[in-house]
Image: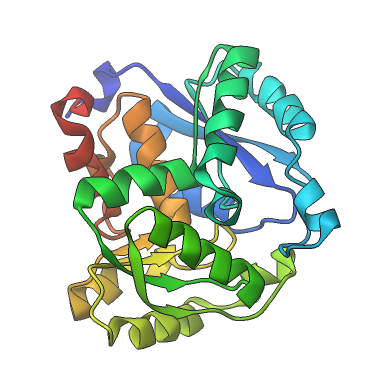
Length: 256
């Protein structure tokens, strides 16, 4: 593939304000593509993940749409809500949000959870492992939503943490240990579900050891956005199978 002949792509990412993981990891993933693919970020306030009224109010559409409009001014090719709130609030939350973003900006929109939905269905996953830093009140809703969609969570681990900033303080080794525990149930894939959680760096070595695809939220979002922008996600290597899996799902239309 000749990158010099390919039109540069700009990926827009809507980012929780207290997130310190997804920006550096996304940029590191895309670095192999040089100036041909760049990521650009807009923030809105997210500081707690729980079922409290204050936490749920963080996901009202007005501030998200404001951030999306500012991102669109950078003439991005795709806008993604790089967060996992729809995993407990329901897929319709993100479908409606993305429709509003597209209507407001004229830019194609998607999200982390819509990317997961497409990928898991494309892979035919029915038995999933789940690893998050979340509270049980959040995790139980996520599991119930997966179940309603025909995906059984056969094993899960959660850290009972509600502070979004603190999710980034757990190291990759700790997350790998959680994944190892979940892997004992032999799921068809493991979702490390949180865009402020350090699952991405462990994916390749974990998959080599276990043979189980590790689907990290930051990686899933980046791969999905590349495909939507017409670039082949399989050009990204060293971060696990998710980029090749997403490439296969979207087919030859994104081969450049």
